[in-house]
Image 1 (cartoon, rainbow, N blue to C red):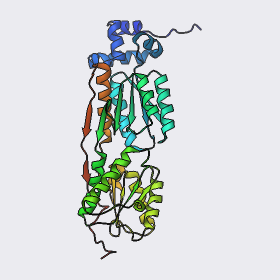
Image 2 (image 1 turned 120 degrees about the horizontal axis):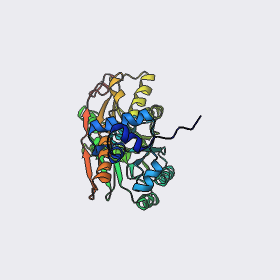
Image 3 (image 1 turned 30 degrees about the vertical axis):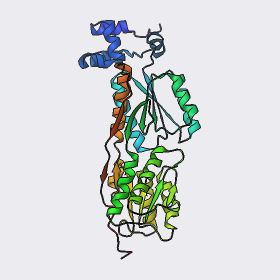
Image 4 (image 1 turned 45 degrees about the vertical axis):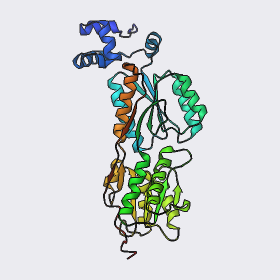
Length: 342
């Protein structure tokens, strides 16, 4: 049997009764072509089993139509939500997202970024600004657009949220309920600038109220539910016991609640909890988690739009977009004194 030849742009153009240039744009830069034409070209290409030769395209155009993103973890619903929106927007414009995870390890992030750069990505997306100068030098050497998310440094595009303000909101909510013995479960403050900013905000709110957040009331943990339980267990050993615990991310707050409940501590009657992130599941806990909403989905969509402006429109000036945050009061925090302290 003769080997079947691979379909080409010429074949697709003939089947669609349109030009090769139109087919090429529809497949590589769909934003420049009418939606109806894009759908017709894609349908014909799919029926023929057409797969674009990205290496050949990159040699001709100097672009790979890929965007590289390095995230701390793929296990986080926060980053997953952002990545989903980025992929959706980029894919609609002919770009593919290449994802690397570094598990909050600065050396692993540098390796991941080097690999993405070696794949010829057209742009890079990173989380936060806290990384060694050697990693920043690597990013500079790539000479591709960079977008920073959640936190950032000057000189690059940024889609930010006020993490310091989120800490203030979380603490102030509990202070307004009458709590004065606050404790915190958070991520590694030495390498996670989002967590560091949130804890700094909690400190600031407490100091404004004439209170002090002592170091023994801060438990640094890995960013997951099990670690949240461990952090809560450590804080429950403090004397006097805190009346409220803030999880500097919802996953930690959820774990803390589970640990308290496992020990027979009624939430919020005997202890209050507040998180930061407002991940989807937080509204469905029992009790539902009071938290600070961080718009992860919009962070992803705005990041993708920022990348596209750089690549398609040739945007030159650095963009700095700060998205709003808000307090979401649910049932995991109650006024003090609570029944166990009255």
